[in-house]
Image 1 (cartoon, one colour):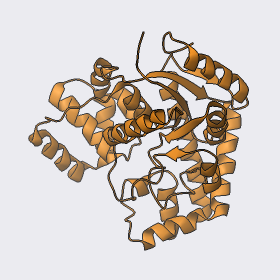
Image 2 (cartoon, helix red, strand yellow):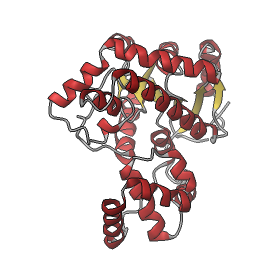
Image 3 (spheres, one colour):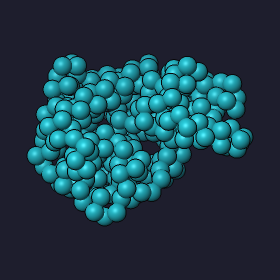
Image 4 (spheres, helix red, strand yellow):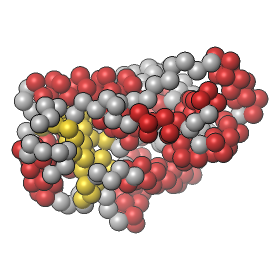
Length: 313
């Protein structure tokens, strides 16, 4: 019988209703929520990340929210260290760890470890940097689509860091990063996990996304972004290039009207939600439910928590 601790994962696309669902689960299971969102880690970025409100966080303990400033680097390996520490603390308190978020890479790394290749030839990195300077990120993204279309399909075309990293690994090893990750999968799996996914009809989700973007603007999202710029955070930061923030920067810099920016933000958020669902649907172990099935979710998770067998009930 495995002695690995059990954790619950709640995944799903943006705007599907994870926050409210997770709070209900945590209350029913006597659990604590551990964030798995690459943007909610940042302080001062609240509205645009749809961060749980102070009132929501007061209902159950939350971890891995507001742990970095917007100009501090943070990647999946750092997330794993922080999340595993938080999981250990929650278990020590005899509570149920509930990992909640839409950043699939963070969840995958937490459950199965993260592929590391630290010995890329510096000459490869320098050559790719020169290509970036001379050709631009669009050309490198097209190159990545040719050698590793699966990774390219998961990345934003302007995600310079990850595009360069994927190309580095391909040029150094002759294999796409996805192949390395598959070979490494679950070599470092410290938990017995149960993953629940939330989903809804696409049209309903897209309507929720559109309404949420409108609500963000009404709540003061442009002012939040202006405050970040006034604090000295550059618009070129990785955090400031994320969906919503880059759109509001364009408004503040007079590169776009608010109406235009909102329309593009809605479109980009819908596309992001589609990529998230593609990622999570690739995992055959996810149990999918609608946001209205909180009671059924609680029942099936309780069976998992009290069962001595395999990962899923």
